[in-house]
Image 1 (cartoon, rainbow, N blue to C red):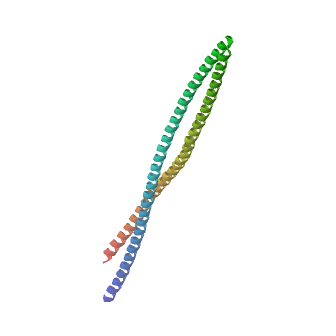
Image 2 (image 1 turned 180 degrees about the vertical axis):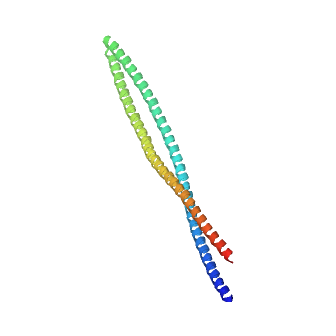
Image 3 (image 1 turned 90 degrees about the vertical axis):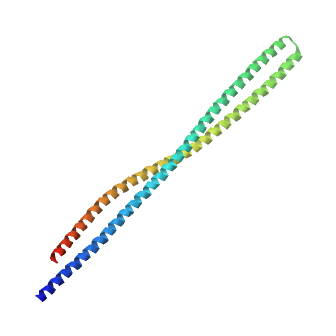
Amino acid sequence: ELEEGAEKLTIQTKEWKEAIKHRESAKADFEELNNELLDERSKARRLEKEAAETETKLAQLQSRVDTLKADLRKAESARHDIDMELTKAKQAAESERMLKEGLQAKLAAFGDEKPGEEARRLGEELERLNERHAEIVAQEDKKRKQLVEHYQGQLAELQSQFDEKDVELRNTRARLEEERAQFALQQEQNSKNVEVQYDRLQKAFEENTAQL
């Protein structure tokens, strides 16, 4: 009986060592799975942060684009106002020229040379005035074109940056959704693995307990 009891104790001791070994193995597996879950959570949080930062940059770029568009509209409005003022000035100069030419014709009809010379002087002065108006028109038109080109260049550059950030945001969101899906799948698989390990350990524990 003593020998039989010793043999039984040896078998139980071996079984307990196996159970402890399985428990340690299951514990290591659980810790590994848990670390994987933590890594996935960290990766998902990082992607969410990147998406939020990209959205903030997009909002800032959109604000700058809107501001430039407003400035461009103001520049176009100012150009229109300048065009109207120049048109009025040209019309006034043309009216004055016609009036002076009419006066010159009337004076010439009287055959008086001095009034004719005065009319010619006025005509030359009017011509210089017209040339000055033409210079002003050309200068203002050049300024307008430069201003419009400046705003359009900035707007095109900002629009390019906006489009680039928009693509970046879509890609980040796509990666985030993919990571979330993988995280959910991994979490589900890990939960199943933990349940299997737990059931196996529980069963081994119950069997060993029953043999005591």
